[in-house]
Image (cartoon, rainbow, N blue to C red; front, side, top):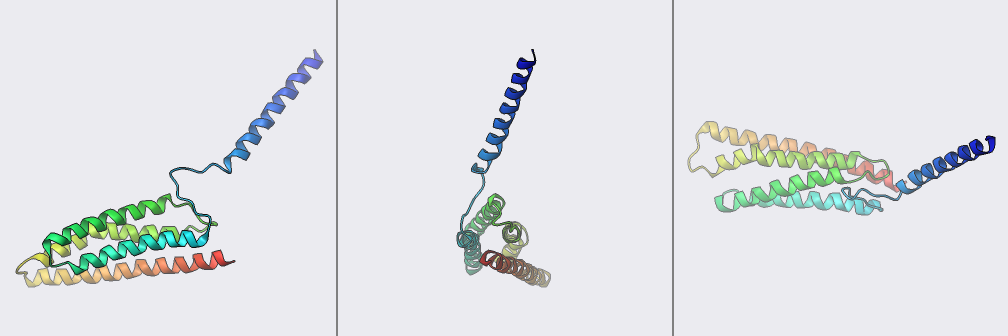
Length: 172
């Protein structure tokens, strides 16, 4: 009887050890298919940078056609779509060597661009396309433009600071 209970205890202990080993050893190599991974800091940085460049290209393209009602709304739609997708991509991006500030600053910037494209920038476009505008609408347009400029500059400054910290962290 003692031999059987010892065998059951050893067998249960062995199964437990095998289960723990399989759970811990296999988990390291499994990657979430809904996440974006990078092995090199330069690739990680380039990924964020390329998304930033594309959002800014669309922003500048929309500014260039601000007085063309047919083109501005196409550009605005593209800006909305790409800035939203870029923001979502930052949420999918895994941390790189423990750094989260860079991707969060990028997500904040893309989120700001998405929100602005849907809100105050769209309002400014509507005002800008009007034939005759009152003084109050003109001042509203100027106010919106100044606020967007200040907020955008602030987001970009935080993003550049986070990028610099990331670069310093990954050089070590």
